[in-house]
Length: 126
Image 1: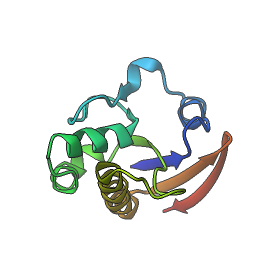
Image 2: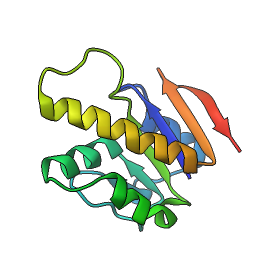
Image 3: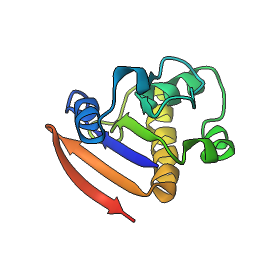
Image 4: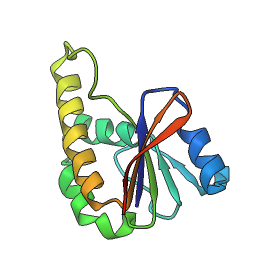
């Protein structure tokens, strides 16, 4: 698994498409509380986490139960843990749960990359 994270609109998806020769057909764009494991890339993982929380569904257990389905994937997510603490409780829960899930994915990833303004910074490469 490769985990790619960074701020919103910092070029994560473009980076992945160029670096790993990914076509649009290979990308699942998160827009609900389930993942499509048939695609090579899962983009917008933070949206998936938010949808799970809004629907009162456990995120970490879902990921733990499906970790084998993620082993060959590239996961792209926004870094929502930096900056100002959200005023809304649901947004704080989202930020905290996303952080816990991303830590779990980091432990299980072969490679972790931060993209800032389109530039990669490899944090883990096993």
